[in-house]
Length: 568
Image (tube, rainbow, N blue to C red; front, top):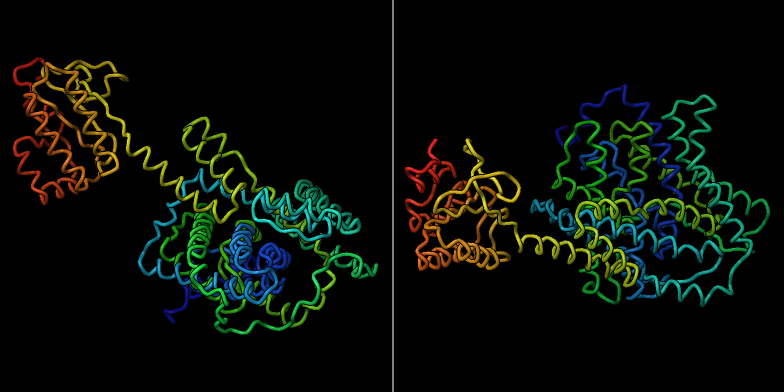
């Protein structure tokens, strides 16, 4: 039985009520989300239901989060649509097959990355870049749903394309669909703001009231369905139509005629975004319980979930923030809640899909707008502007590029921006001139503290690891500081902030030593960390600096300033 997950081997009966209630409530949220996000991706509605089934089962047995709910997500759906709209016609067999293979390819990549223990890939996107990408993607989703809200179809994966398509088709506006859509949107907005306080005022506990308010999308969907069915409006406005019943067959889909080559890079970026999203949600849910999440395990689990989605006819999936938070708030103690949700989805697919045929697309569009609009969040931009302007610029540039170019090009730009900001900061590290704090063994930046000079010694600290991206700049900056200190006979480089050296940095230190020696200045190193010292020894640099490697800055200054007032 060791193959069973820990939560199942040690299941407690006391956890059952919370898991059951969470499983039921998440199902009420997942059904409209699955249908809606499939439509965002340009796929048949049943694809969203298929993608909501097997991934739940697979994550329950492989994932590390107690309440993570894996399934379709708005941003992922938009990424799928943006990728495939350039490769195949929406509704065609090639489009559906390509979406399935996006799930299979991204799942295979994630699983491989997990085997290779590449959990650090979550750091490829900085928080400002990810926030800018998410806000812009959410805005594009909202704008893309204005046409379905008004009862007609329009395409586009970027702001210019969406605007152009909307204006080209606006004459097809359906007044009845728009009326239903606006009523649904108004009800959802009111429910988000007032339903929980109202239920609490009626006597329900605050937590229960908040959880029940999250089922508003399903109630609105049922209301729209009943309105269309009872009034006989199904011929007067766009509806979901026939949703095939029965469970999806598990099989490897045929290859699309366009081949797999055009899907490889989009699959990688979809995998990256899904992993960052899923890991962030899992860590957020784990924090209140003081649990830890293994990034490599999450890679493996999410990889299996996407492989399962592809094999069952779905599209890429990830841990959804809204569903997972609802799952936790509804009382989920273990992944049994997800198994209950999966069982209810099986029941729906087996018996009740015919009931969805008259569901108006305008109401689904309203549920998407209401759920996604809250993701258009500029708090990160404001915080970055106050603290670090480069992060604010990264947010703004990513946001604008996603709007202008679409999410597929925007995510590539986001990765480039994240790496560029990191390289820019690392390539111009802070170099502090140090002095001694009087009467102590402490050495601080002369610009920030009252310090006393050290006779004949220029004391510098580089606040960054040394590598190819900054070695030349650091070497030049040190040479310039040495030239500005003609009375110095020694230069002590404090390495306390240097965590690694590469070959370029080692060569720079050798050239720096030679250049300073020509000026009559001896280069000394202090506080070299063990791993960095190991690199120096293997490269022969330790032999070169024999007698000039010092355990601490204090010891070094005692040797370099013998007989001075410094001795304490």
